[in-house]
Image 1 (tube, rainbow, N blue to C red):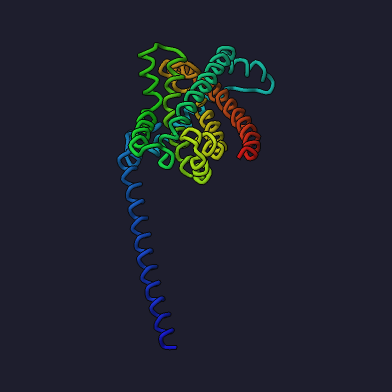
Image 2 (tube, rainbow, N blue to C red; image 1 turned 120 degrees about the vertical axis):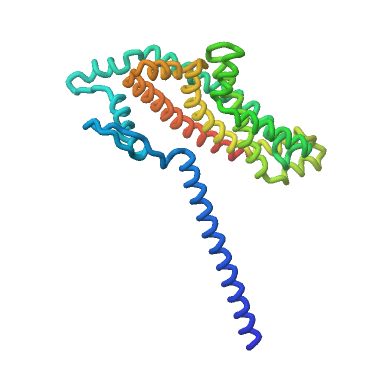
Length: 304
């Protein structure tokens, strides 16, 4: 009985030490995280001050955040159009006065995103098998492909757009290539991580029956990752629609050129109209993508 009591006492002592060590580690991690957040905020000017002119003409110094919030409200107020129930039709017509041009550019934006998604899926899907540590034919090949995917997704889409505008001129081609290259890097990473979580037993069975590497990927790996590939692809298409509406700002096609023009000419109601068009488009695409993904994944469960 005394031995049992000693064992229980020893266990409680060790457990108390472990809990105490875990609490110290938790406190240290919390303090480190809080310090990193405060330092980042300080470097970003979150605690900075600026001089503001009051309505009375007096100049005072106040925090930038506090001084800027009213200006944000003023800017948003300028983008709100005048809509009256008695003249709602004419007011909407005045708000969307360039709707024909905007719809044409919206179609161009969606086509840019679609072509870029196809390019990104093709490149990312093929490279994902070489990047996956459990599927790549060689360790160094996996390392090289991973570094390549990191490089092309690290460069922002706007930078890629500027490069391709310089190479191919102003137009949708530059935008499609810019988004497609970036999507290849992003999707390649997501696909490779899905590949690393598959069950290797089907591949071992194909290999044992004499199948080569390509047959192992085709019949052993692809059926397992199809649901994830579809989900990531549809999500990336939605992201690409938003991206293609921005890169036109640097001349790469789409609605971005209209956004740039509206901001340059301070046509605030045009900005809100363009935002509404993009928002409605993304909502519709998200709804259709969700329905399509659920339908295809339901079918893919029978394939696997």
